[in-house]
Length: 378
Image 1: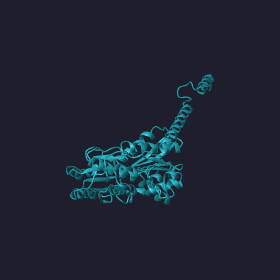
Image 2: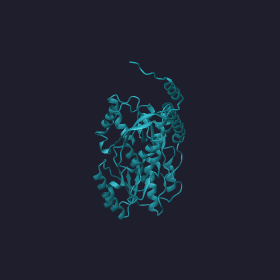
Image 3: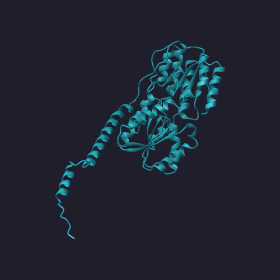
Image 4: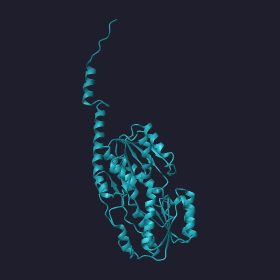
């Protein structure tokens, strides 16, 4: 059988056109890779410029003018749980400030139990408190007792997050956008540390509006990085921190060995996950970020162990700020922004920013500022 002759010229022409990138679909892989690399480089450069402002010392003071100390007031402070360092730091700040201004105070610890939180608010109403400070408790979760307290004329401040309802409390500390901003700072840090390319595990605790804002800030920024991928997004509750949460994190890393970074919503979660990951040999080259500025986590950053960055807040200052806002309202003036700001702590600034006790307490002498404003001899 005679085979028909086949000209090779079309094939040659096709090859030439393909090399030239003229044919549809030809030559796009290299261009795409180049474009992606360029976008990643641009994002890393932007991230590093953003980090300079986040890592700088935050030296602003609390408001320097305000009413003098109201007298004869009684304040009840209710933290989410004194067992959690962040919550305890906020509560201790409020108790110290109440003592400094000359008020009677009572700390009631519900130890993370929602029913007890409600009972503690009812106790404050029954004992005729003038003010209530909630630390790291979502007002919506105790709306009934708070409505009763407000009807009784009690002033209510929530510390560590906003009142998403806008109706159950009188003010919140810190001011607006702080948690969105610090979530963005965590994302910019990871973009820089991962050189614009990474696989991230995100853990969310939706129980507090502030935590939702922090995660939202993180997500809105990390999605701008074309080669930074959130491969796992897991929701958990704080009630699981001491039980199933550490193994949930470990299981996630075993299932997704390509993960090289983790965003935790707050420091307690990071600290409790670390032993489980270490025991299972899963720390590897993982870079973790979280927020609050608690002592154990600052220790991680100082030793370059597991957690590389922390969006640290002076939580004791938040507690003092709550008392200042109460004093303003007791005097018939509105609450104000207490100027509490976070600082991104990393290897290059963490030793300068913290003492040997590790917990971050800010760069300003807020206690003296408040005492001077109140006319109190602290």
